[in-house]
Length: 260
Image (cartoon, rainbow, N blue to C red; front, top):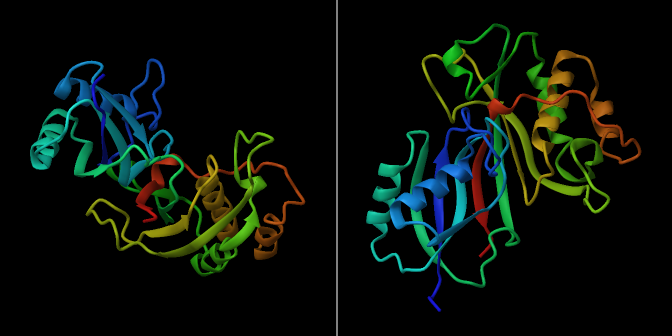
């Protein structure tokens, strides 16, 4: 019986042309592309990969981690990274590799995820910015949105901020940080002149939670709802789903950090 070796691979990807992380029939996904790359590098049935999380269609990642299970030891980390990047598409890049053990569970191990959501308002943006920046045509009250973002910090019942929930879904979640600031992380000469971002951190998010939060902040900025409405939506008394969800392509998984 062959020995199994365990590694964590840190990557980046632009999600605009992919149908999310998880493998699905007849569409391109990040996980599918990674497994194709592993197969090309090492041959069939010699590797298995498992991601730290799922991202939806068109969602990008500045820092994502997947676990590699392989039947041979990776002796030269630089050679591995160079091989991965040479054989993967231009919108997928490996950053580094590190050893782990069979005791590490990439799904259940405690981690902090940070997402950012890039947006602008007031005019239609250059089409080249579409993969990364959502543009809202209406005027937004950014100062009010900043106050609204802070309402999400702390422990609340986010039952209205998740989709495809089951009876077992824990809707009580803790948000460590939620803020709206001017975007100084990502710049391009074809971006709108002024862009903003929401930054949000938590140990775990429900499906579409971040985009539903951003959707309510857009509603707040347009003047359709109030700060009181935001606070009331977090009590768990009303379980109706929101109709407004922010588009996928403004969302970026900014960072994943595992507890030591």
